[in-house]
Length: 198
Ligand SMILES: Cc1cc2nc3c(=O)[nH]c(=O)nc-3n(C[C@H](O)[C@H](O)[C@H](O)COP(=O)(O)O)c2cc1C
Image (cartoon, rainbow, N blue to C red; front, side, top):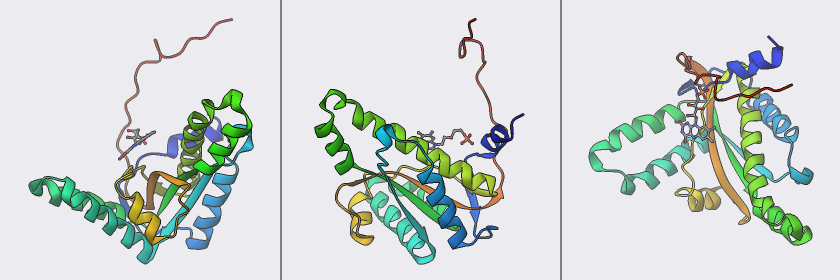
């Protein structure tokens, strides 16, 4: 099996996170930057914007999420929600993925023929970036999962970390040491999923 495919297999959703990563904050930051920069974008538009939160900033993010969810969650299930959020907060940090819609808007004005495609390509680009980062972390034995507490946390996040108004939050990726590995993954049958012709 190709080495790259082995690394793809190593990337899983890891929910039991700790702070004992082999890489330090600087190394993780450099790794995330590289993974983002090497991800392709339509017209090389590089629409991804990323914020990495460690330590107190990470704690603060998960407090923001809890307070945003409290009024939206039935009182008798909020303890479960808090428990889940605590498991994300237990990691080393969180990557916030944004797309810069100012860039998307400018591209739409510049290339009117593709105007409808640029928002779609922006969404595809953020997915690619997220997967690149997730996989790069996995290769270094750092576990992560993909969360979507946007848009309910958007305003608070923007205020707290001085996020430009054109940056739109698309996903949150809590990461850390792998305290419990992922279980067996189930795959649907290849038949009906792939076609090969010659
Ligand atoms: C676009 C997308 C959105 C996802 N959203 C969430 C999410 O909001 N919360 C979550 O826990 N996992 C989320 N996941 C993770 C998937 O549930 C997970 O990747 C899938 O079950 C396969 O498991 P694996 O990541 O271990 O391979 C998302 C994955 C993708 C690709």
